[in-house]
Image 1 (cartoon, rainbow, N blue to C red):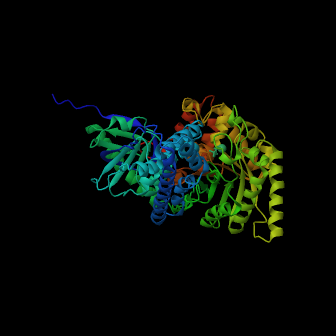
Image 2 (image 1 turned 90 degrees about the vertical axis):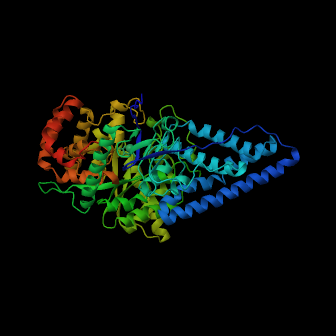
Image 3 (image 1 turned 45 degrees about the vertical axis):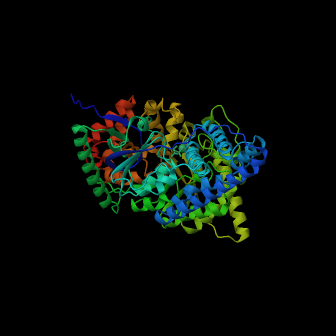
Length: 590
Ligand code: PEP
Ligand code: MG
C-alpha cells in the first residue's frame, strides 16, 4: 500500500525573515580523508610553493567575492569577508602550516588541513557565539584552500532549477553572497545562528533562512518538498495537506502583515491618548542603520560596538572607530544615537586582550570594568565617539555599571579625551550626554544614586534578568526559567523608572523584553519612556503603541506589580490589555 509518511517537523533559530516552499537541494562540503603523506626533503620547497600559491589564489577569489558583494549589497556586507582575507596573512595559519611542511615534511594539503583542524579545536573551546561564528569563516577558508590544492569540485552546482531550498550542515558566506534570491527560495542548516555571517548575508538578500536545525542535512534528500519559516524557525519536510494549507494561510498572513507594517513605517509612535513614545533601534553593525531608518526608527537606542573588536587580532584604531560611529550618526542626523562603549568580557572577548580564562566570566571582568582597566583601549574609543559627536546627537552609554564611582571614572577619562582632542585641534562634541545601563540588581536598587550622576538610564533587560534570577542567559537548558515577568525583575524596572522620573532624566529599555509585545506594553506601563529594539521589530512595536492608551497601560502595570508570580503577572496583563494585543500583534503568533 502506498502509505504516506507524516511530515518531518524541525524547529531551529529564525535566521532570516520570510516564509517559502521549495524542493530540497543538499550541499555537501566533502573533503577527502588526507593521508599523512611525508614528502622527500627535496620536495618540501615545492610543497611550500604550492601552499603559497593556493593562498594567493584564495586571496584573489575572496577579493573578487568581496568586490561583487560590495557592488550588490554594500560596504558593510562586503566586510564580512575581511576576517577570511586577514586569516590568509595570519602567522597562526601561514607559519603554522609552513612549519609542518618544513619540519614534518608533510604535503601542503595535509599540513594546511592539520593546522586548520588545530585552530578549529582551539576556537571551539569557547562557548562565545561570536567566536563560534568565526569557525564558519575558518571552514569556508579551509575548503577554499584545500579545494585549490586538491582540485576539489565545488559543492555548489549552479544552473539548478528554480524554487530550490538549500539544505546543508553549514553554509559559507562566500556561497550565500552569490545566490540569486529569484531562484533560491530558502536556506536551512544544521549549524549556525542568526549572527553567522552567511545568515547576515541571507537577510540582506531577503532569502528566508532557519539555522541550528541539528540534523536536517542528514535526514533529507534532494527533491523533497520543504517549507522554511524564517519567522518562527519552523521547517517542515514533505508537508501533508494540513501543513500545506497552514503554509498558505501563514504566507498570506505574513505578506498582508508586512504590507500593513510597511505602510505604517512613516507613522509616529503615538498612543491613542496622544502620548508619544520614543522608539529607537538596536544596531549590531553600522550597516544596519539604513534598515533601521527605513523601518522608521527614531534614532539608535543601543549601538553595540563589540563588532569592532571581537575575534580580531588587532586593536581597531581611532580612525576606523570614528568612521563606523560617524556612519550611524550621519544616518540619524537630528536624532539621538546612543553608542555603547565596549561591553567586553562575559561571552564576548577580543583575541588581542589575552584575557585569562575565568571560572565565572559573567561575574568577572566585564563591561565598564574591562574598559577602566584597559584605559588605552577605552580612551581611544572615547576619542572616536567624541569626534563622531561633532556630526550629530551622540550619547555615551556605559554597560554593566554597578557603582557611582565607575561613572565618575568614565567622566574623568572623557575629560582627558576631550582635552587631548582640543589641544590637537580636532573637532569633537564639547557637550555629550553620558548614561548608565541598568543591568545588575545593584544598579537597579541604586538607580536613585546613579540617576543623580547620569544624563539617562537604559535598562538592559537581558542582563538584568540574568543577574537578578541568577540564570545564565546563554544556557539553553535554563532558557525556560529566564523570565522577564518575574516579580523581582518587574519591581526593579518600576524602581528604575521612578528614579529617572524624579531626576527628570530619560529612562529607556533596550533588552529583548522591549521587542516582545507583552514586554513592550508592560515597560511603557511601568514608566519606561523609550524603547529600543532590533529594526525588524520596529513596525510591530509601533503598531502596538498606536493601538493602546498609555493610561490603560499604567493601570494594568500597577495591577501587574501586585502579582505574586510571573504567571499571575502575565495573566493580569493579558486580561486587562487583551483587546490591544489582539489589534497590535502579529495574528498567527511568532
Ligand atoms: C541587555 O543586557 O539587555 C543588553 C541590551 O545588552 P546586551 O544584550 O548587549 O548584553
Ligand atoms: Mg547587557
